[in-house]
Length: 378
Image 1 (spheres, rainbow, N blue to C red):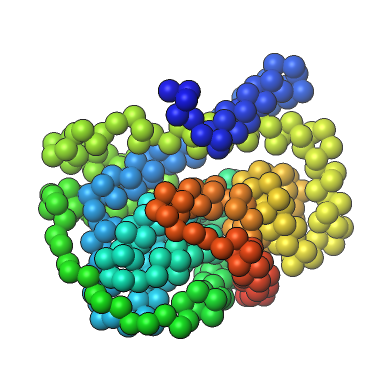
Image 2 (image 1 turned 45 degrees about the vertical axis):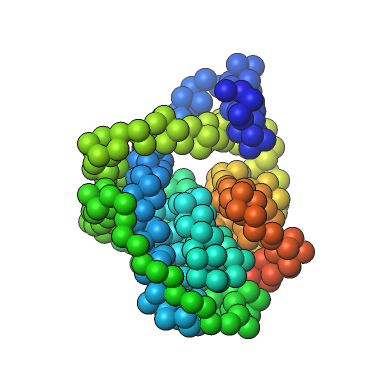
């Protein structure tokens, strides 16, 4: 089993080991460690539930059917397909989390490309950019949002009320960059032949489970309840129809280890000088644009989750910080977990991502989208 662990897995395990070492040596008092971990169990339950729901929804071919129908609905028009892809990727990110878009939607879109004779790179870039920039609207859209809900102290509806204009601005800027740098100039394509899902019962069960989850979010049911309940619906369907798909690999142990380690390491570093450094970076006045760009810069340097945790305790406006750490991680390959997983998926499908182009266009998008989103934050 150890031989199957990748570099990212060892980094996550190392982070947890470092956190446990901090507790063992007293650098992080046991009482503080227990307090930190006690506050994240709803987050852990949500993570397990939403990943299981998303994985089994993919296995039920819901994403495949929707993607194929989009390509058919666009009738060979590059512009129409572009708009449909933006809507699809944005909705998946908003309601099912950015990692779902990067990990599960990317393979679907890349598999669609050869079937319809569509260039793969525009589809791939649409998924990863919108996985990040469309993750502002709801607490479930991004793990950083869920991490910040305790400090923000807003309901799901109020959170969306503050963020919806900024979210539209970020998506609009992303659309401009996608079209100019990746979609423009591509020719018409041949719509693929529609094929029904292999198992209609699983398809409709998974679709119903996703609809249930979305309705629960709109009704402000706690995510730690909504996600596992929706996941249970599709798990039961697979238990009846195809129980071989129900394996322990569905449980996102890598994410659970990463988040646990994060909640041990960052508080320790904050107590031993990190908070002072972060306060200096933000400045006394904490200008909103500076706050957002500090968050984005730190996310592109060390990843958005530890960046948010490092800045959370000293930032005056967490909503502005969320814009930086959500919209900004589109420059470096390690800026968000979603981007790391996206690169792995592209490599498996043989899609070459031109790195210089990725870095330069991502930097331009980060600056423009952050400015637009901060300017319109309600």
